[in-house]
Length: 552
Image 1 (cartoon, rainbow, N blue to C red):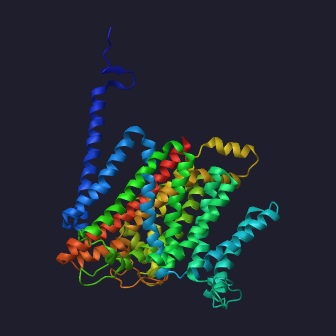
Image 2 (cartoon, rainbow, N blue to C red):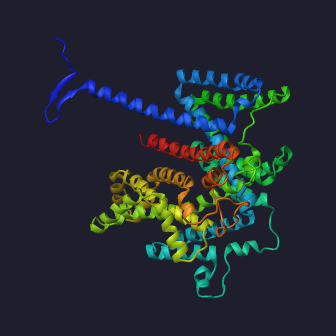
Image 3 (tube, rainbow, N blue to C red):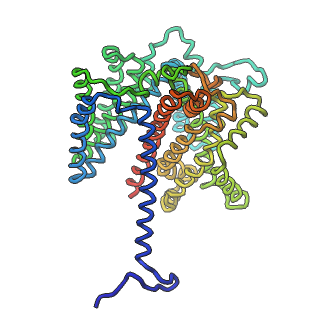
């Protein structure tokens, strides 16, 4: 006998109707799709004003449709039906290539116009030297007390970075006694050329990462081969770059940030997951189709779209003429602001999260702090701008609108978000793993360092990147601390005046609200800003998905 289960009465729940639940599910789906469609329409509208695709010749559209769109749809549709994991592998390879290209452009900008490679290399040495000393002391010093290790580590890094007496002695006017490692290196009579310094420092970081990745896949020999090959590719890029019209410094950065990581992901995925090798057709079709299409339109003479987001827009400063206006100084300002925010907010936020989750007692003070952190995460950004103005400018007497003050204000803005997300990531580590560590005789700090933090790190990074994504799009705090809306040169130090991308776009839409600025320059700036936000958020999404996959 058939039983009607559409509506039944369950004790303590009352009447349960599946029809209502199904209707509610469909309503949620409709609301979600409506929001996504509206957002897509807005982005398409803005992108159309910035790129103006309809200004291209019909032959240009037809060429790329045949060489790029059709093959990509065919390959993607086939893999979507036959092997979705291979399709995911291929799409991630394309996404890594695009995102790493964007970040390599920002890194190259830093080393070309903001931070000299000599100063960067000295800073790297100032971190490597005390790190090596700390590791040596850790191995030779036996079981030193934690307080002694912390004090020694702090002293070594302080002396290496600032010398003695450093900034603390400068407050009371004490003369310098011991120079910092940065100062010692910069005063050497003979220094390597810039691309060599970047090959050793930036390329060295990429080399170590590639070697560890290959070691995890195939063992010691593969790790050594990957490290040697990576360093050779980075060094060779500085020699090959000028041949194709790229200076040695940007070529070295491009190889370190884009070429090697993308190649490592593709080769590593093909070796470790042979069943997904078919996904390599996706990047092959996308890259090959784009190159073939570019050659065809160049030979045939088809004119492309008259886009406002072009090389001139990305590399020029502001101008009163919208045709000549660019976003370059604002991009550099945003990069320096984000570096400052990350330096300030990440260690403070993660440290506070570790203390509150692992060490703080459960008492009224802790609960009071918890409530206030949650409340601070929802405070409007303009309030943090007023806080930065009152504390840093009025009370401490610092100049307005500098990189340091702007970064500190934005760090205060995202600090509660970093703390909350880090606490959630630390809380997600199973208690059984902590107990197992204690059972093996580990101390509280050893358990936190070797068990909790490694497993919580992907979640911590996800929350931090999303918080940085919010900070890079904020305008109100920068306005409140007196940051200039328009600058004509890149900031070269943390005490320099700096604008940012959202502030520059705001100025174009208000102070220079002519027809060309409002309908062309503003959409172009929005497209660049949204592209950076999507790139940062995509990294957070990949980290989150990878973390969830590893846990499952």
